[in-house]
Image (cartoon, rainbow, N blue to C red; front, side, top):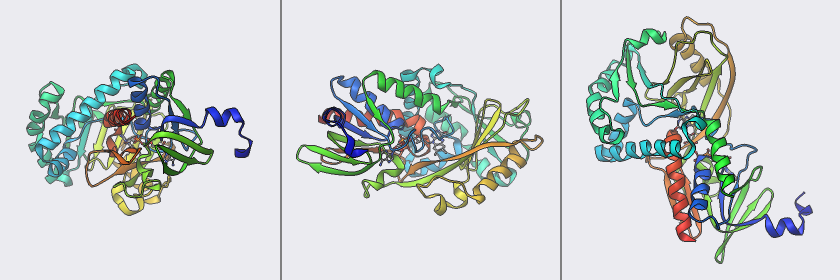
Length: 379
Ligand SMILES: Cc1cc2nc3c(=O)[nH]c(=O)nc-3n(C[C@H](O)[C@H](O)[C@H](O)COP(=O)(O)OP(=O)(O)OC[C@H]3O[C@@H](n4cnc5c(N)ncnc54)[C@H](O)[C@@H]3O)c2cc1C
């Protein structure tokens, strides 16, 4: 097919001022930002999949900004001031996403977020409970309310959990529908005049004098600036960017009559997460069972993780309820030794915005916006 390109196609459809690689939450937000700053800038997004094929449409839809056990770990890495900044970015990122797309368009529902602990995790739960007032005070000026986190043990029985003795609630945590979010982002980008080509895998980036040649599975493109928003896959094109992949496996049940569980739930330092959606339970995680095997950009499932997910459903989440699994899938996240995303000009005219780890809903819009502003100001 490539040889059959017309003069018109080659002349008009294979170049843009800015090419963005990757149509996930970061890529589309960057495209929207660039077009909003200057509508005359031509912006083309190239996506290798038929749909976005990374994390943005595969995730669990938690609009979260940190459960207590995560915050304890993160405070060790960043210090208290650093953590304050991080939570502030996540919170503002969520507000920005809601403002950009509207709560209805992303099915935003504030049903609360909860962290569960088993009796054998007594040390961890004691530490988390002891830190409630510390983190409540730390985030008060960000979320503009007191006592966001609280101990809420009486809800353990109303949710029907078994083998759980401590439950901490975050009354500002919410859930969204990531498919609706991506649909709305795409509609916004297209309305602003962004072009998006799918089934177009970028294979090589070649710097030329004052321009960049983008070699793809569909032919060669040219642009002034290129932004890689390819997240966990960035090393295929830029091997030196400090990112490692982490696969997340997810399962979802068939609808369960009279489901008692409502909200977003974190277990085992966030390595497991589950929520209600359409009378079902969506559950993911288990990467910690074999970090090496899950440090991959390959989609797929493993018996080890799938068994652990089913066990958690049977023993803790739905102990008295019959359920059937309807569907399973996986997505790929990008991690690094630091929590902040990488937003930079890697080499002349070549930018990247990657590594939103497991918090892309909270920080993806902001990351895309910052990258878009950086690219725009370089034009
Ligand atoms: C299972 C799972 C659950 C998660 N749950 C949550 C959650 O509840 N809350 C939360 O905040 N975050 C969650 N995350 C994280 C969140 O989804 C990510 O941080 C976010 O989606 C990253 O967005 P992105 O645009 O950077 O990357 P991606 O969405 O991965 O987008 C990158 C895109 O680049 C494309 N691409 C890659 N290489 C090329 C190439 N060579 N040419 C063309 N295109 C290319 C890919 O196909 C992909 O579409 C979860 C992630 C996973 C996997």
